[in-house]
Image (cartoon, rainbow, N blue to C red; front, side, top):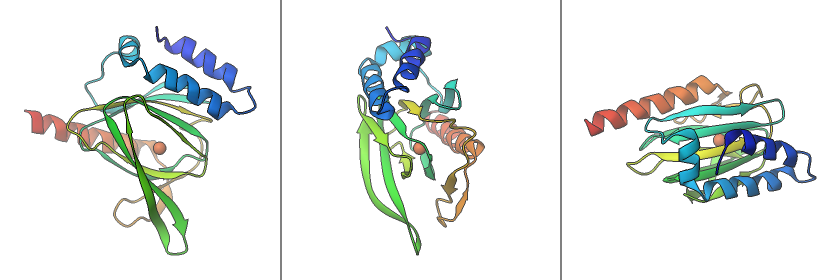
Amino acid sequence: MFEIEAFVAECEERLRETQPALAIKELVERAVAQPAEIDAALGTERHGGLRCLHRSPAMTVLQFVWPPGVKLFPHDHRMWAANGIYGGDEDNTFYRRTDQGLQAVGGKQLSAGDVALLGADVIHAVANPHGAYTAALHVYGGDYFATPRSQWDPTTLCEQPFDVEAVRQVLDEADRQARRTRS
Ligand SMILES: [Fe+2]
């Protein structure tokens, strides 16, 4: 059975290990292998959004629900991230900084059951390529909301301070679009 309090407690224990990111990735893998259990604990989400399940200076646990067709701008985290998918697919595009600005250097599609462990310097953009919602469980090795970091304008690729409200706006807009398409 998946319980958020128990999951957070286990993650906090593993934060004390020598390789906390790897140790916590294993926990996320175990969790996303049982999607029905997560749905039972968190409810089956039918709306896009991000929901904070735990937040401390050392760790943040988020549930992300990516609406159909959503495209989130490039951003970094400046902390490790274990991003697990438990429903649908998530397309990741990876970038690096160059003298000419941000440059795409590759991509990876994650499907239900996959967990991507991202290093603190990773820059990525995320998209949901399908017409169904994608559900994800993310654990970050720090305070996701309070750590200063960057996002990049999706058109100009200009670097800007990260703003979680901008993430919510992208999710909300894609959610509205999905509803309009459905109705
Ligand atoms: Fe991210």
